Length: 407
Ligand SMILES: [Mg+2]
Image (tube, rainbow, N blue to C red):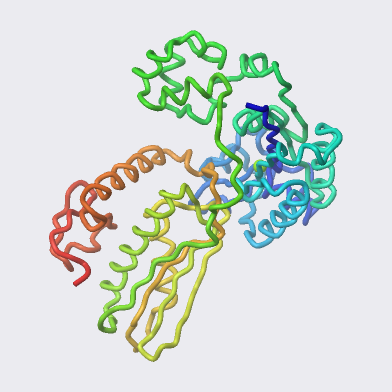
């Protein structure tokens, strides 16, 4: 097969860089975007000054404040970041139709099909980098390789602000000394196991036979075997990210009971989260819709700097929005709905939060049960929510359904 030419481009400390650009007095200071020090939640971006204090994306804000009390904490503004993102993608789209939006600030370009249009690929890649930086006024890092994995690893090496091209025949040399956790297939647990086996660099992994990796990590071991050798056949896919996903219900009779309505919102969020998981998508916008008995419709949305996929998190947001919309109204509701939009495909860093791996596995397990026994066979709920309404039997945080939600 012909060697592909994949370019990965990533804005350095994106949100913080935008904040610095809009407010030059921040330059040179540690900047942490994601929330104020006393707020719950995690830092979504720390600039390089803040990283010197050990602050990194995904770290709880309280901890970031302890490490770096003199830091400037900013809540962030999704709309502004989104505008910068659109600017970058409009530049990139001029170079190839094979463009993948991996997240707001991260893209893959496949230049293989357009190769003949450009007399010198290295020159073109440099030009892309320069143009994006000029248009945005922000520094970006760029990696080039024969597939997405190597291109992305090259970008990591290029940070901040550089360009690394993994030349043909140089793949092994490039991979050999990289630390194992740079591979996307290696989670915290796998890291512990491998370090116990005295495996610290990707090159060390080459000594392990495929069967050993398989017996250690199951199917992930198979994946690891390929990744450690820089093998990756995933296509750069521009299509297939839908604009939005929504779930809504029109009730057979109008409802006014807030508890019952919220229970139904939980059900819709659960179904929405399932679709997101299936599409490997994360949402930057969650929107709730209600329609009153007089057919008046209202929506309320929340913009999220950190995209979400988890049912619990989506429901928490949807619940707040719903209660803002439907408080003190004397009208009953004929419809409720929840919508996820501005979808992206990258696993956000917030998933490095402590429970994330467990939650993700839980999600996968729930999906498996549902695939076999139908969606209604399992419902996920929040504490104290559905039991009284439907006669559910509670078991370890899950509620086994004993009555049907839909008549
Ligand atoms: Mg970035």
